[in-house]
Length: 202
View 1 (cartoon, rainbow, N blue to C red):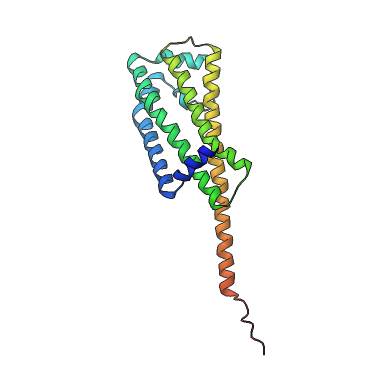
View 2: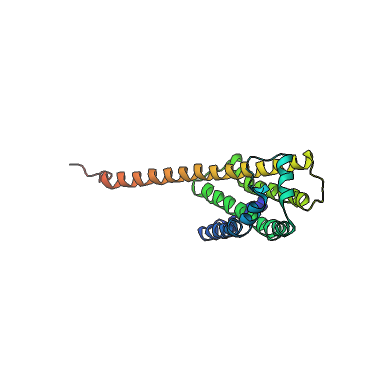
């Protein structure tokens, strides 16, 4: 945790959070505009990475069977081995840095917050594990069995669940921060409208 905290101390300024947000979403835009539409069109469904609720052996075999050499090459590079390496890291950095800043400005410290800071990076690890499974399947380096599909599908679902938890935590602590700001503003307004007695006695 000390290594993560020292990293987040360097990346949790407003400027750096904005940079990681823009960078991650530029990579996402590249995927959504250039690579994924081509692959999805070829296979007739969503790629493995976008099967949010997982998939079974029949879906996995259908995707692999519908890939031609050109689309497989595109799926391998730049999709899986470049864009989908950069995006999970940049997104994890953005989510964790934003959470770190929210915890700091709301003065929140607990074991739960420490766990929440790790969650985006766990999602990143599951994303990378999913990528490895997908590469093995689409290159036909491994037989498409229930085991590999279950592993890959589980990684896909866990990636999505953990990312959702991180976004929900951001929403909760952003609301908490807004609440604190409103309370502080109301206190200031009360002080202005009802100043303390000057203490003069007649």
